[in-house]
Length: 207
Ligand SMILES: N[C@@H](CCC(=O)N[C@@H](CS)C(=O)NCC(=O)O)C(=O)O
Image 1 (cartoon, rainbow, N blue to C red):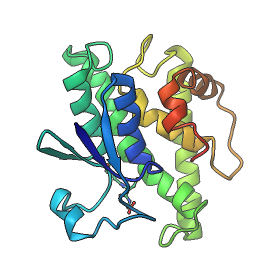
Image 2 (cartoon, rainbow, N blue to C red):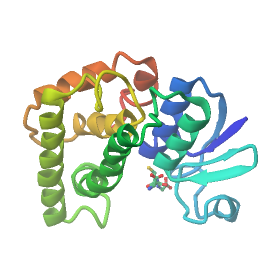
Image 3 (cartoon, rainbow, N blue to C red):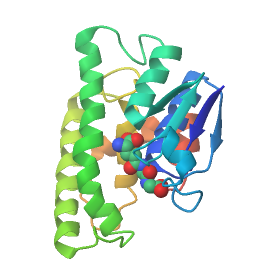
């Protein structure tokens, strides 16, 4: 059975929990990371030398990086709808996943880790302000995309692109500064909320 290492309140672990539920893949989960057993523990570093959650072990195969794990599980247990095999459609899915993991994770360091959790070194006022400006611009780009697309991020049906984007959108609605209204992102948030696994692991009161 799939073994997931990582605390259930982690942004990146929640992606793995969500995709497992969408795919009907069973798993066990162990609490590692902030507030639990530390990821710089030798036992954890043997599994993921990078020292971050999530890590997973599947039939002896060890994997790290949340988006990679999501793609691996969708390839193994999913169908063409959730992770298209056509190269063009697949690139459409993956470009949104990469955008979420790179662009928005930088801005959320300022807007969330600095501005909301007051976590050093991200709580520098300049960095917080940059992060807030940048995440506002990025969610605006998402809104512009969703104005003519939808109801899911790549069109009519749910794909794994919705997983990292769904985490970003949930965090956006939890941020503690005056945010512009983005009606198409709000509509998308409600669309995701029709999925029980999203409510269970993402829109569950945690940012
Ligand atoms: N690029 C990595 C980032 C992983 C990451 O930043 N994980 C955070 C939690 S969301 C972590 O391990 N933090 C340290 C801790 O919880 O002890 C991924 O997508 O999996």
